[in-house]
Image 1: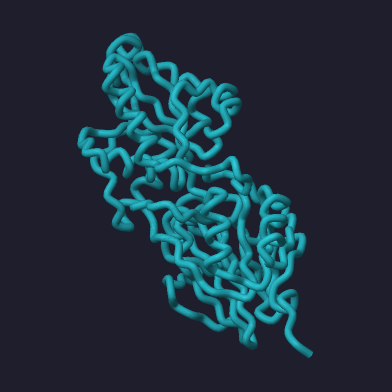
Image 2 (image 1 turned 120 degrees about the horizontal axis):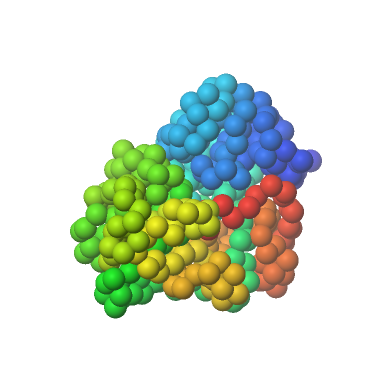
Length: 341
């Protein structure tokens, strides 16, 4: 009897499960053995008995959840293959954030590639996505609508630098998620030639330090700490760039700076109403997820027999895939959000 893809990998309440290897990919609850694609909290969770991931992802998990986040952890470099219960497992770069990986699962001539979250756009803070031919491609669909076509991130950063030049008396206050987006925004700012200190919220410090330890040059960073609140209201951080997590914009920390110009880096800034709801003056459309052309081009490049869609706007992508001649199946996995975007 021929092997079916479902014999190798199928969805369960805990996540994608591989019966012959007895492991899960990005499980949403604690399991005996987990293979983790990247360090965002909707994919990397504590409590597993055994975890397999790239060295950078394991470092991120330890930084975010503590060194005892799992019973044991095994690092697997990109391109290295390991055998788990007769199933070959290889990790390939996903281009999402530092350490992010696609999980390539091989068994008895059947290959399934689980993308995790990914993007195709250039990003100097992580290894670029590497397409892998597969029988089944398991993809995300966060921005799987034709309206989502991300502009060049460098052009979005040019808007930020132009605003800084136009309003030297104001603080450029940029909201960016702590893992991946903040470091990418900092790197993009550096690519414009900006060499001054960039000021960061304390919640970003440990992950920025981790990126630097992994060889990502972020330039001089300083804490966005205000000692004299009276003086700060008028002069501190005028003309400076300050980066903090979106949650910090709602507390007193954000109101201490000199006439802050609120910017927010996210793929969701394509939707004007979202920017308006957040009180964002300068929306920066910078995403760490693939947009519609990247999703469709990647499927064509991988050229699988079947496309499985884990989460996001799965109906539109499934319909497109079917029209292109691919068998498509939304998995409707529960528990994956958009933490990184």
